[in-house]
Length: 297
Image (spheres, rainbow, N blue to C red):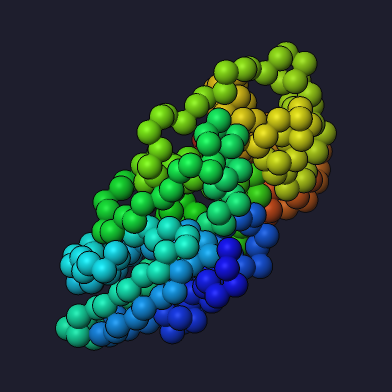
């Protein structure tokens, strides 16, 4: 992309808002998630073309907003849960009315690298050179909002659920955007192949061997030499649950055995089976078994 385009790290500076949370230092591949906060005072701003695809989630009170694209003005009222999508390479103009000075605005921003979109598109048998994203202005999309809020919760937790979880959410987000907000006419293809029994066992054996690590989709997919998008789809198709859900399930099972057969501290067991902390183990253990680790002991 041209060097004069605005990148995602410069976006919050353009909005002149206080940065509350950011994934900048969390090593999330191809995606930046941030929340900024400021009084929702009147403003008028023209942004140059963005190098990344930009999603804006409105999280506060209703607010009037004017957007310009293709030399036309679009007036709308943003409500909590509404989202905006500005595709990469397209400039945008924003204007907010002056009657919002007492309202605090704290939107969630998600920026996606075009390279990430292309990887998912190619893995889904799409012609990645022939589709484009369309502007989305004030859209109520419950599925999109849910994915965004799950990412926000993971951001606020400091990445507690690990790399595999955020990569799974990112895959779901990109596929949803391609289905709903691109000029794609054909449905995104599902993999026509399936895991061989040997491939599935290789992936499962790898998970069990490195259960204590912060596994990623790319790492697991590399074991059986397929793309991360295909791996996630094929694994769920074969096992009935996502790779992330399977990993959490196996960590809980291993922790249960260690709780019953060793005298290790619960905090040590949590780390040994791959959870980020004792509280993370307790949360997932209770969710899956109905009891806490302490009750098992």
